Structure formats: structure tokens, C-alpha cells
Length: 135
Image (cartoon, rainbow, N blue to C red; front, side):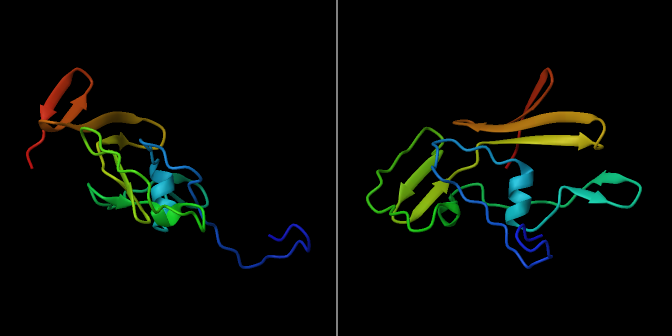
């Protein structure tokens, strides 16, 4: 809705990252906005959790296009951590995935688990238990 003329108008929503941190947390809502998916399915009388999968690479996820327009990334130093969290070079801002938070259940209740990577590989954490993931 246009604030000046109070009419419905065509618009585009664009999410940008003004400064790229070494570690970034992307809620599924953000990922779904970038890929035009919705977290919730709404009907007239109810709301339910969306089960649509969001796919992205485990390594070298380039968020450079979501930075401010006209930013010069040439010459940014390479920054490597044990898990290669971020690499900045030549117009790209590359992130490697090292953790995922999972939710099972409904909108009103459920259970959270986490999967994380370290030097030995991926592990799943579920309350008091830990399991190694097999590739």
C-alpha cells in the first residue's frame, strides 16, 4: 500500500546485509524470503507449519549479492577459521554451514535438535544424547 496515495501498488521487498559478520545466523524466515517460500500455511481458520525444504550449499554460500549495492569487496583479506566460517574475496562473501537447528512438531508445540560440524565431522544433539552423522 502506498503511504502517499493510499492505493495498492506493485512493490519489491529486498533484504540486504549492511555489514558481513564472521559468523551469521540465518533464520528460516530469512532463507524463505530469499527463495520465495513461506514458513506457515494459513487458511481462514487455522495456521499450520510449512514442511517445504530449503536447500542451500554446505560450503561456499555466497551472500555477496545481498550486500549493499556498490560496495567494493576487492582486496578484502581472506579470513579462515577451523571450519572456514567465512571467506571474503573478489566480490564474493562466502559462508560455510556449520550448524542447523531443527524443529519437529507443530506451530504450538514441538522439540528442537541441533546438528553441528567440527574437525571430526557432523554430530546431532538431542537433549542428553549425541550421535555422529554418517555422510
